[in-house]
Length: 207
Image (cartoon, rainbow, N blue to C red; front, side):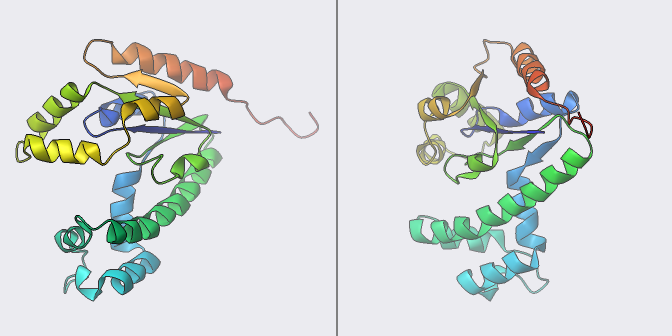
């Protein structure tokens, strides 16, 4: 089974592309959503977060206090590195177990969606990576429409913390252009057929 990563900067449109793959029956692992679930529910990770950032990162009901945790790492590269050093390995183990289950189900390939795929080194778990790219101006417009509470300066600051599209394109094996001019569905269908073609079914014993 092929394990394919899909990454892209904020506002690039990873989510809609993943929905297109899901419509084709492809299992998709959303790293951000799974990370939030693990921080809430994984006993080992919860204990590590409490030790590193203080028990107060969980409220009286045992729920993760996301604003408090965000404040602890905001504008603090050392604390952010500590947080990533705890969460990213936990997500890696979770993805490995999830992918093994999909392989047992007979999936030809799976997708792992992660914004920080190269930054977190999670690409090393994968066979190939898709980079979703779009012009900065297009991404900014999408974000300001989607998140009206953000200012242009906040959007620019978020983008500045992520790898530029040129580097993602250089490191990825495939590129999807979501610039509003090139049709997405033909691009997705072409990759889908390519991944199915590359999939090698297990041979029976003695073959």
